[in-house]
Image (tube, rainbow, N blue to C red):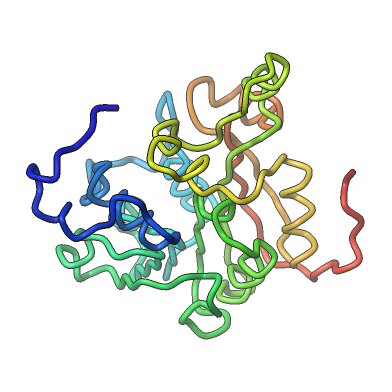
Length: 259
């Protein structure tokens, strides 16, 4: 990826060349990697496109399940998902860093919050839908994150989570070839952010265990990209990521890990 000169955008002068914590790293990405504003092209969530993204799956599943009312996106970034979720009366988002798009779209309630530093800033059972796409692998405590997603979701609501899939066939091949399976952007290594600050790896079995342990019961699985029919049937093997929809259930704190 081509380097970006600090003269190209005055905002570059306000971010450190070598981030010392997660907040600085993600704030740097806002400017350097085109996350300042969302793509808000019209989206028809009644059907999936030929190459569905995590956002496409989330909105499509919520529409199919008839979920309306309020939605929270944890890791909302530039509001790409929330601006497309027009069927929801209340749209809220949180992220570890603030984004320029937030000021441009006051109809979305967005605020900066580090999930690892305490509870989400919402009361119990506030939202009909809670999405958290490509976030859980970044947080220090995924157990706490899963509990918080469940806590703010209404009893009849839905939680949708997306994470990279360490067990996908591409990453199995990379390991077989003695190469590091990269679950983030390759440019992160040149920015002194090892694998995009991914702290945890997941498989379908381990993510399923985490969610059930913390009181979320998975009902749908998929993986983004081409051949959605194929990947919905074998996401654990064929997907580079995992997307799961779950509903609230009783926590299973003694559930054995699937070694």
